[in-house]
Length: 173
Length: 101
Image (cartoon, rainbow over all chains, first blue to last red; front, side, top):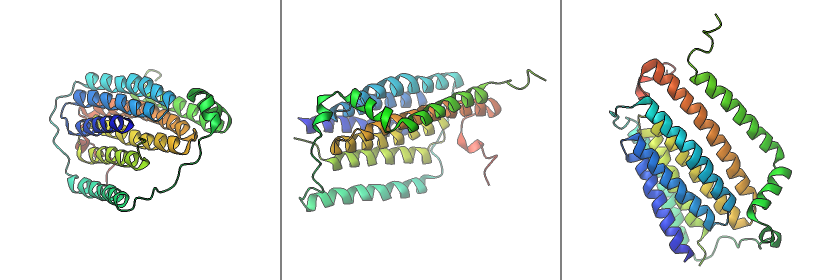
């Protein structure tokens, strides 16, 4: 049953991510990315990461993708784009990683030994919820990266306003 | 019953390849940024899969940070796109070669 869910979600994720790159119209690409985000959130739920799944839907599908769609509609694009001339580089790099994936699959097929037994489940992790567990780790061990993340968001906000505003410095002089 | 960890790694690698090829072969800057989102999501899948495998919440915390960086990147990237469109009225990457050697 878990495998069935995984193969459904993985199939849709791979299909929609290929569609994001292959479709001509940017709006269709963004909507295809939306479907991919929802299925990635479903994958997180099957991995017992419910908080991350909710954040994925709220932030990625709710905020980031809406921002993309706003810009696509703001720019009013005429579609004329062909593919870029860097195709050989892309094919080379893609083939390299695809070969690694194929090797991983073949290696898994050949020796039936599982690579490493997962460590025993911490009993405390199941006793409290996923969100509580993340919150405890986030505000104790990772409190400094958390503050740095808030600083990154502040800098991004100021930078976006300065870059997108047309006459920021011309009003003074 | 349980899905082996290698399946998640393979799925993540496939999504990452798709994003990387998209960055390299598309000319529309918006599609390039969407492909960067694909690559970030591929790493997030890996983080959550290994977080579940090792029963350690730290992986999900890092997904949280990756999400923050993605949001910041989108805000600045789209602002740059708007500024570029204002100066050239195009978002084809081939037309921007001012800082290229």
